[in-house]
Amino acid sequence: MMRLAFASLAAALLFTTLGAAGKEDKKKAATGPAIGHMVYFKLKDGTPENKQKLVAACKKYLADHDGIVFFSAGVLADAFKRDVNDREWDVALHLVFADKAAHDKYQDHPEHLKFIEENKAGWAKVRVFDSEFGDFKTGAKK
Image (cartoon, rainbow, N blue to C red; front, side, top):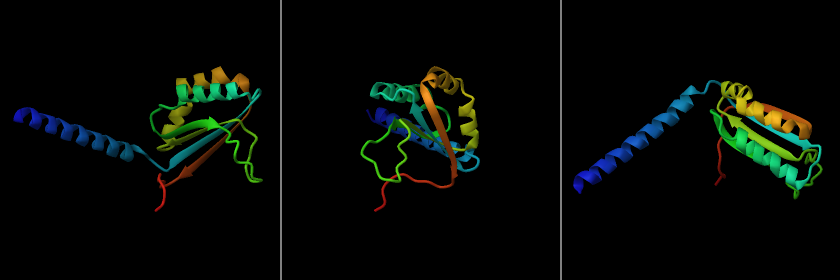
């Protein structure tokens, strides 16, 4: 019984160490600032069904690429109607890449190209905003 407990503890420590090492490798692999890639789609037919279909396509084809540190896709939030809110879009895609190399690899990836090919007929307009940022964090201030 003691051997089993020791083996389990050793395995847990090994996986924790490997996981931490993998995270450090990813941090070291990033060259340059993180890249924010924000895409806003205006649909030709902005029905709720078409909006949800595009969000689902974003999740299917765009969420799991190497180098993505953040992914989100969603529809225009109806509750925000201040003068400063740009409301000329239907679906937003937000990606943060570890670096420009990850962004560039994503742009040419077959899944990204398939997403475009399968969905572009429904787009009236697409606006892309790419930005560089150094350090960023998540979570609330205390």
